[in-house]
Amino acid sequence: MSPTPTARVRTAALVAALLVGLTACGGTTKGDGDPGAASGGPTASADPDAPLREGVKMAFLPKQLNNPYSDIEGEGGKEGVEELKGEFKLVGPNDASASSQVSYINTLIQQQQDVIGIAANDQNAVCPSLKQAREAGIKVVSFDSDAAKDCRDVFVNQATAQGIGEKLVEMASQLAGGSGEIAVLSATPNATNQNAWIAVVETELAKPQNSGLKLVKTVYGNDDDQKSFQEAQGLLQAHPDLEVIVAPTTVGIAAAARYVGSSSYKGKVAVTGLGTPNQMREHVKNGTVERFALWDPADIGYLAAHAGVALASGRITGAQGEEFTAGRLGDYTIGADGEVVLGPPTVFDAANIDQFDF
Image (cartoon, rainbow, N blue to C red; front, side, top):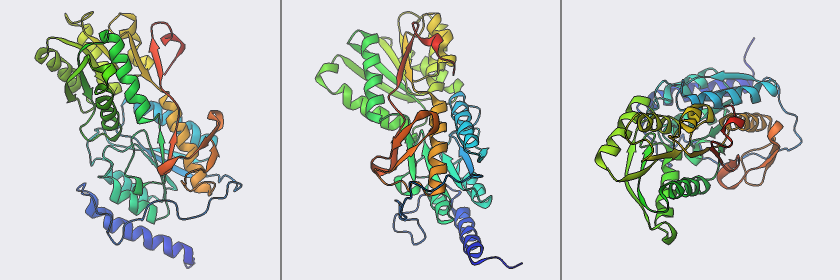
């Protein structure tokens, strides 16, 4: 049987995608003027009454596998995809390096997935391959950590960068008593979301009400437990007057808490940031960590799944103002630049941590 015209077009697009994808494995970024680059932004019209497709193949590509935070996101994605009678796939690297996700995207194009959900390790390194995916008819939903805006259809943001940055400074100020030295222990130097939050932290620290706080250093643990542990140790050796370590990453905050809790700094240096209740429960209960914040990462994956199926069904295109329903989470409206915000972060402490199990 000869392929249909639609099949031939799709096959040609896939071949082109693979050829270009081979050149993208080095992690370089094509300029906006590349002839084959996707233009970005919605071009079709949404039909909010279109039936939700069954059997949508949606692959999730987190920053790295075997990361407690990413694992929970994946579980939420699986819940959402299967709830909508789709086919869920989880793939990804074991490290969170900048270009480690590129080869996985190219493989997902070959496999003709309907939707790729990605938490980008580097918003530009993954862009050429994501553009090729879109040219092959695959919808792209970034979640947690955005890809460049012209490389995806929708971005599911856990909270606004402004809200997260303000919360980090608020907690640091409370723990330092309004003044003192603080340091940031982040993920990778190229992590889109952490860098956006740190930029807000720096802006907030420049305001008069936070003039008593001094950011002495930002270091990177690369979301590796041992390196994050060593970076926390190094911070305290280099800055003996440090009051608070702020780690906007679940790997970093757990490693910093483990170091401080097992050292003479316990009770003298506070640790805060973004972590999961199950990961941080021990440190809260033994008094090392007083408070930290996060959203439910399972909800991010769940919301990304619903956005992905809505895109594949034609209910939304990623244009500002479009609305869709995300199951148990309710209704969402797409904001500027295709962004969907899950909601504000929750602060966890000894009084409420046992109410959460993730």
